[in-house]
Image 1 (cartoon, rainbow, N blue to C red):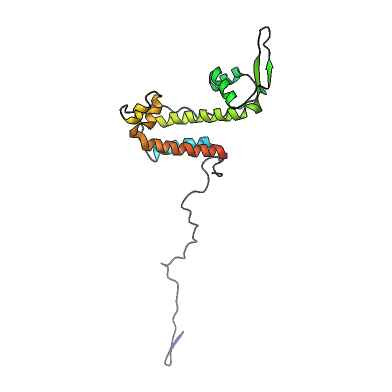
Image 2: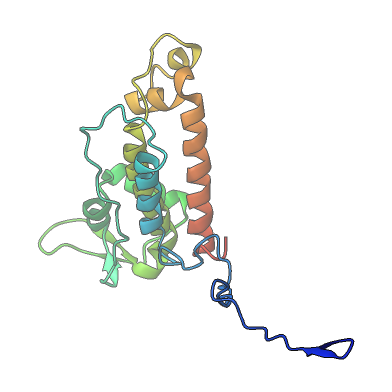
Length: 208
């Protein structure tokens, strides 16, 4: 109500229809916080990373026809005692290399068994005693498959640069990785391998 001299003016203020009430503000979340992979399982993380290289980053594939080998899941040693022949069958190493690895880790036989009707004896190792070398074998198997996946992104080695000449005695894959034309790809490979190694050591993504 407004007075002007002896006159009284009445003003009625109504809300305007074109001014809607402000909606409640939702919290701003620029990045998803829910983990996409299991915290303690690096295998889905590795697969997701290579999918991202091919789809989101669209890193060129030089061997698109090459299929990915499945990532190796750790073998569950269920028996209590193992022979060298058992380990050769499980991990694919030769008997001599298996013996050398056991010696390098200082793993002595738990006991010996004598084959029925034959001369000689063979060593028996416990699952607990084999744990250090089994862990190393699992890691080597995983890295071998990851390198197979990387090869799809590396062009054939040129064969003429200094790196190729230096690595000539080695495998074709080694020459591909270290060829001068693939330095930045190999740097990315090395960084990712170091990351996976840390996850392997810390046992979880969150710990990293």
